[in-house]
Length: 200
Image (cartoon, rainbow, N blue to C red; front, top):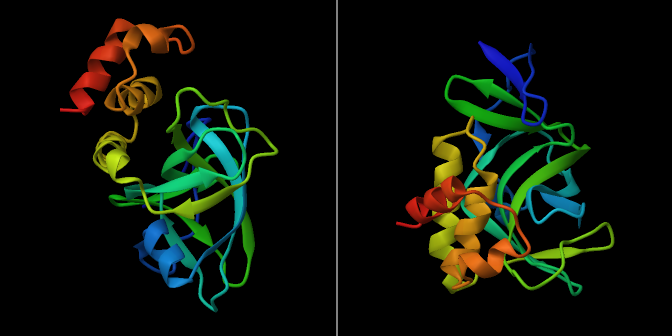
């Protein structure tokens, strides 16, 4: 049975089956089957922090995996944070589930609004706002292992809210101390323990 889930509202509703197998966002962007037309921040450092539009220039509908096991690095063209993207949802947080697949759909020749789950890669910089613009670039080598661990943890536990711990993991891996992080970002001892476990 195909179920439509809401990442934010945690509601579900039945809908029609997907016309094709889900593909990864990274691969679709690389091959030109999908294009990001716009992306901006919403003032958050972590979680559902980026909003944008994607365009399907092909003649067939696309099913796009929610989880990115190969995360995407978005460089901020301004002075705010660069971001590591790990998931994509419809603008309202919705997505489809069919068996063990979680995906969104982009109809042929259409543009849809999307929500990206992403994590700040630069502790000292400001959160990206509405005026932030991004370009996709290769993941910096020093971030690659951590980004993959964060994305893999999310994908293996899709119903767990571990956003705080996952953001902590990114900063800890860059050598930012817990004491320094705590002055700007609220977390619990449990979040810190989980962040360290994710990085093992």
